Image 1 (cartoon, rainbow, N blue to C red):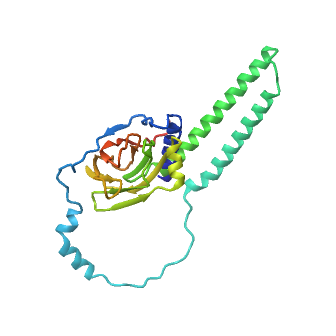
Image 2 (cartoon, rainbow, N blue to C red):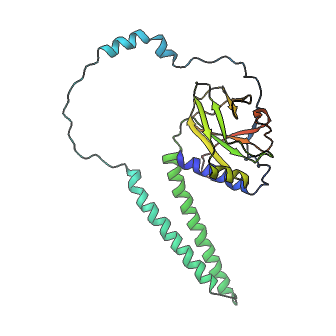
Image 3 (cartoon, helix red, strand yellow):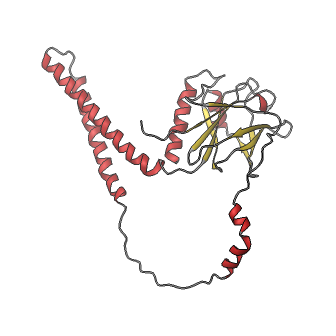
Length: 265
C-alpha cells in the first residue's frame, strides 16, 4: 500500500509541477467534491452492531479464558516461494538494464547508418528493448499482486495551489469517528506549494461507508464540510486546491477525489 501511495503522490507532484502555480490540474478521473458551510445531515450507521448486541455473552466468554503454558518447538518453517523469486527478478532486471545500456552505447558510437545491415541491427536492438520492457512489466505485475493488491480502505489528503494571501500555516481535519487531526505545514511543504507542487498532509485508514468531515483553517474561521463515499479496500485520494482560498474560508476551496487504480498497465 505504501508503494502504491508513493506512486500516486509522485504522479500528482509531476502533474502539479507542470501547471501554473495558481491552479492545480485535476487528476484523470477525479470527481469534484463540494465544500459547504453546514454539516450534511445524514443518518449514521451503527458500527460493530454484533459486538454491542452480544456484549453480555462476549464478556462471559472472556471471563472463562485462562492462561495456559504450552511447549512450542523452535524449528524452521518453509520460506514463502514468492520471496525466493524476488532475487531472480532483481537479477533479471539488472541483466536487462545492462543489455539496454550496452545497446545504447553501441548505437551512440555509430554516427551514420550506411547500409541495410545497420538498419537491421537497429531493429534488432529495438526488439531487445521491447523484450526488456515486457519482462520488467511482468516483474512489476508480480510485485503489484503480492503487495498492492491486498489493501484496506484508506484516505490520503493532498494539498495543492497557492492562494493570493499566502497558504495557511496549519489546518484541522475533524473526521466523523471523532478523530481530530491538527496539521502544521513545514517550511519545506510551504515552499513546495508556492512552487506549484503538492504535499500530502494525511494518510490513514477509514471505514468504507458514507461519511462527512470538516476542514478548518484556524479558530477564527468557520470550518467547511465535505461528504465522502470511499471505495472499499482501496486507497481514496482527496485533493484540496488552495488557489482560491480567501481569509481562511474553507468553503472557497476546490476539492476533488479519486480512487487509486492499482492495476498494472
